[in-house]
Length: 93
Image 1: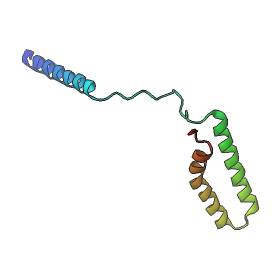
Image 2: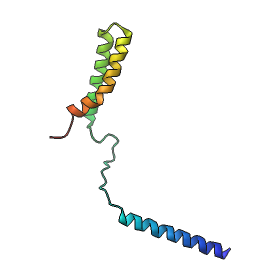
Image 3: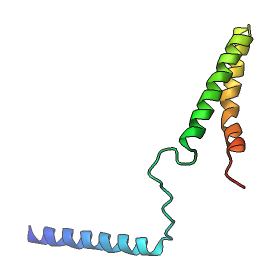
Image 4: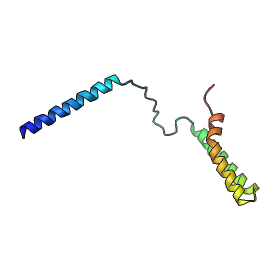
């Protein structure tokens, strides 16, 4: 019983030493978390994207008669929307 405890303690200590060594050797990246889920865009930018998207969907629904074309245009809008947001609201200046 005592031998098993000592062996377990040695294994735990070895595991802990290995973890601290790996932690020291691995490069440390800066912590880029901001505490917000959508930190890249402000609340106003996100609201603008949602409002314009809903307006576009309503416009497609009201102006296009064919149901298949409506669904296709809405799918295309949802597919292209992330690229448009990145291009329009990009912070690379």
